[in-house]
Length: 130
Image 1: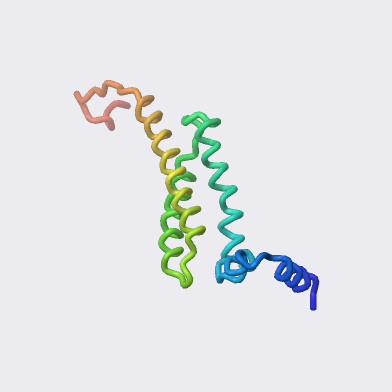
Image 2 (image 1 turned 90 degrees about the horizontal axis):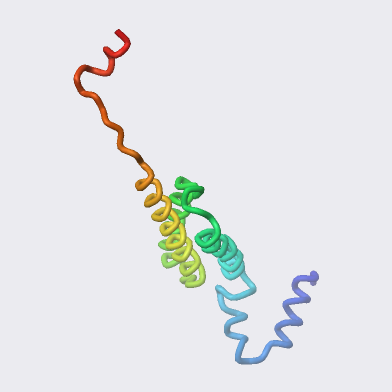
């Protein structure tokens, strides 16, 4: 028996009966299905913190778009797998929402900062060098 198995056995013995169903769940703390979404919350919290600390002008729009798309894709996957992983669904939906808001903020600032220039349509642009 390795150190990890020994640790799991010790936790099994010390765990109250009310928490054992969660501990032995297919998406419980003994599996990657618990720890992967739990750690991914750090990425989501960093994105939410950016909403308050980063000006919209400095937001990487392509990165926000890709993170929002992956959040939607993995949300769909979270309800298709068996057993359904609602922690994974929640983290990916929150990732999608936070990045969509960032993208919206950046788009508003970019659209408001675009200045219209007057274009001269008297002759084709190709002939300006003549």
